[in-house]
Amino acid sequence: MLSNQEMREIFENTQIIRRPNYGIISGYHELPYICLGRSVELDKETTEIRGKIHVSPRFLIRPAYLEPRYRDIFGEENVDKELAGRIFGFMGFRDKPVECKSEYLQVKHLDHSVDEQLSKVLDEMERMEDIVTGVIVTPSSRYYPISIERFISTILEDEFAV
Image 1 (cartoon, rainbow, N blue to C red):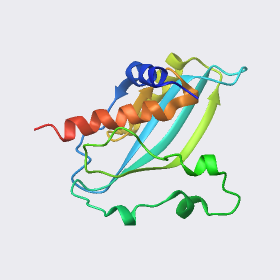
Image 2: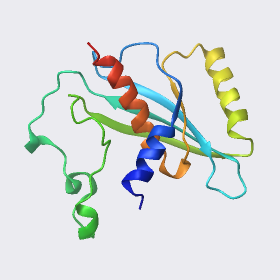
Image 3: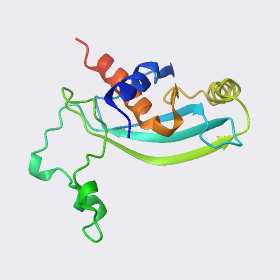
Image 4: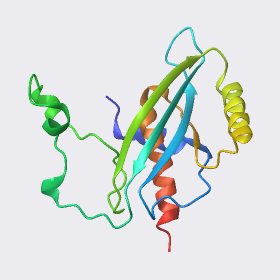
């Protein structure tokens, strides 16, 4: 398990290469991303993670008793008591009235370097005229959700700026 300092270092060293070119909070939106980092697989150089974050409307107010619990998501059979106390989701949105869910996850381990794959991804996005997908380079593929959280929090900071 990572220490708070190690998590902070991953968060701060994440590079946001490309951000969506439109506001995301005014309605319920999908926020696609591509996250690249050095591979954890010994015979590969790069790990590429593609996914989508669903972001709720800005003024969503949900009573605590309607929040999903661990057992609602994963069931009650064979639940390890240690796991039941863990929080699943994104950590950094305490002051922002949004809900984020992650789905559609595709992970590839690739033979070329992070820089080569980054160039290919940016070329692909330019050819497709994609203005909605974010591109992130993580310092740790194993802990990429920390980098995804950084990506989302950066966008939220801009969206909620007065």
